Image (cartoon, rainbow, N blue to C red; front, side, top):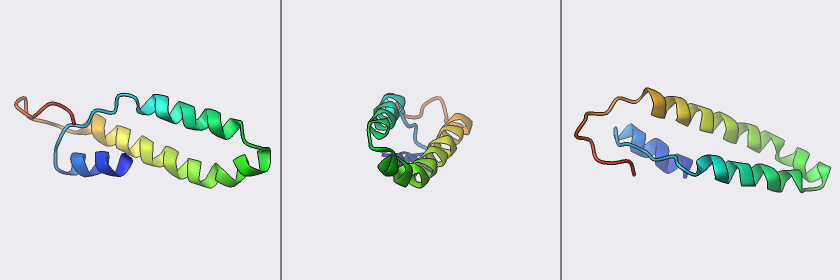
Length: 73
């Protein structure tokens, strides 16, 4: 999902990120339910995911679209 959103932004297309926060919240809750050693094993991947989401959000916020651009995808 994140790679698709980045690709669309690279094409100067609007991206609708509605629901992403809910999906991430479910992921975090699932990780908290894991045994501690498994949760710790996922930490590096979760940090990468967090950084990707932060970059995507910053990019989407700073993107400039023309008024006649299509609706978000």
